[in-house]
Amino acid sequence: MEYTASSNSDMRYGAGMLGSSINLRSPVEDSTSVGLEDPILEPRKKMRKMYFAAISALLMAVAMGIAVGYSAPATYDMENRKSSPIKPSADDVTWIGSALAIGAMTGGLIAGPVADKIGRKTTLILNIIPFIAGWFAICFAESIGSVIAGRLICGIACGVVSVAVPMYCVEISTSEVRGLLGTSFQGFMVIGNLLSGVIGSYINWEYLALVGAGIATLGLVCFFLMPESPRWILAQEDMDGAVRVMHDLQGNHVEVEEECLKIYKDLKSQPKGLLTLRECKHPTVYKPALITVVLMFFQQFSGSNAVLFYSTSIFKASKDFLDPKHATIILGAVQVVATLLSNLIVDKAGRKILLFLSGALMSTSLTALGVYYYVSVANLTFEIRFDWIPLVSLILFVTAFSIGYGSIPWLLAAEMVPLRARSTIGGLGTFSNGLFAFIITKTFSELEDIAHNYGAFWTYAALSFVGCFFVILVVPETKGKELEDIAKHFCKATISDLKSSNEISVSVLSK
Image (cartoon, rainbow, N blue to C red; front, side, top):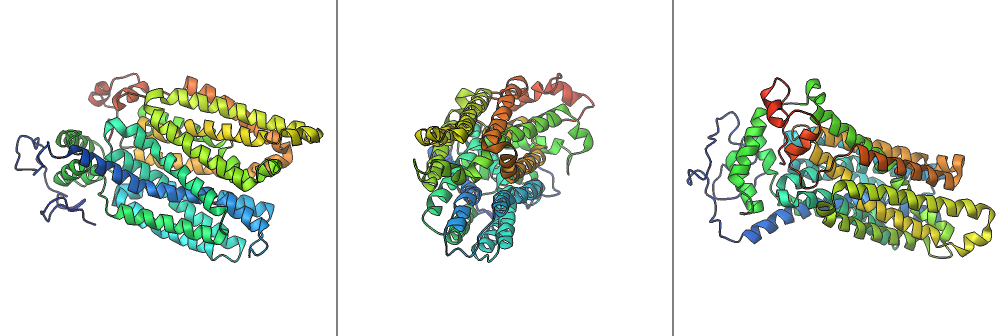
């Protein structure tokens, strides 16, 4: 794959400088070494190139959102359409909902090392193969096994997307919009979730699978024309290529030569290959990793995936107030608005306050939902009179989830983690998220059988409440902080002390 920034034929990604020495002089001192454009030429146009590249990558998050949201409308159609060739049992529905999470666990583990080896762009381009294969397996399925297999394959693709797309967006962004682009992944994913609910209410589950395949293909077509991450190009020792690409993406909004030189020096100072055991024991690595895993636990054990996967079934209780399929669409729309709002205010309000509010409001809404179902067991009049409570409670729940736990754990995982460990811990976060999502979606029906639906919601409410204390006591606030300062939070020594001592040197560069 080539990206031509000029007429020079040697400007290939990841090629041309392996094994050769690199002149670390500032390109400003020798203007002939890097033919940059006049700094006064259209900086705004250059800035838009960065956003267009990010949006092209984020189209794959939309494709992932359609896969995540597919379960609710598809299983509803399978169960209620007489002509459906597949009629799933209650257990089959849980497998269709949770199979995606199993695949995502695998995809999340392999995405980091693969993206480091062949590049973020190439990884995402090749990822179209499992996406299309999974959707086609679902579309032409004649048995439950084929549907579940297709969901597993799509899950692998989703796991790769959830690691590689945020990584790419962070690495092409300026520091001023790092929070915005870092959290935009969740915003685009819930847009896909909403599209899945809206389109799925009008077409059969077979055709909805074709829509998923089409969106994934559209993402590939748009992203194919975008450049590779400058950080990965520097890892291949192509300084000129990285400078040109970063300048093309970001224009004159940053000192690209200085930034590339800083990133390159940092990359050269780090050991190659996978993280060693000694590095994993470093507080700037294992502490953020533990916080990331625990945040993923509270994200999933708030019951978020259970609510979204089984929202249509939950709303059957209030079918006289609002059609279940329409209620699901309303939830999706609320999720999109709340997530986009969170993306806009996360750099102003702060990460901790949004996480705390998210947990507190989720606990409150699930408690109210549980009370409604508990009272309705012995009071039919109450159930009929207040059949609007499930919708209102879940709208509050989805809003609360979206402003905090929906996107901020992923942002914190990128901000807290050193550069060298980013792909590894990103994969660990995706794996743990997929594992917890599988447990929640697969056990929701069993938990209902044991503790009734109100007991299930109260369990999730209690866990969300506990998560508030974890946020207050453990999670660091990263708003407005340089990554060097965030690293200092995890160890008593200063960064300069760490680098001058015999301890492992860990990168905390933003790129």
